[in-house]
Image (cartoon, rainbow, N blue to C red):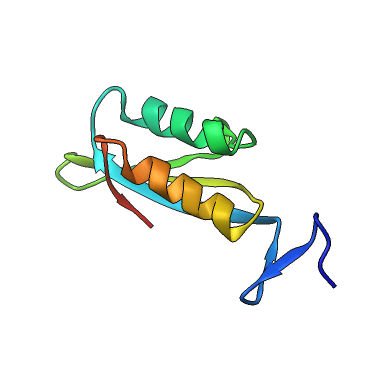
Length: 92
C-alpha cells in the first residue's frame, strides 16, 4: 500500500535515510558549498554528522552526508544540483 509518507519505488521504501558521498577539490569553501547545496534540497542534513576524508595527496576531499530522501525524484534533484557545482568532481 502506497501513501504519501510511505512510497515504494523499485523495492526502495521512501522516506529513508540516505548517505551520499561527494568528492571534490580540497578548497577552503568546498565543504560549506556542498552543505549549502544539500540544505536547499534536504534541510535535515546535520553538519555535525558529516564524515570528511582527505585523499593521500590532500588534493581531494570526500564528504559523506546522510539525509532523509523523500523519493527517487528527490534524490535525482540532489544529484543534479551537486553535479552542477564546479567544486564537485564525483557524486556517489
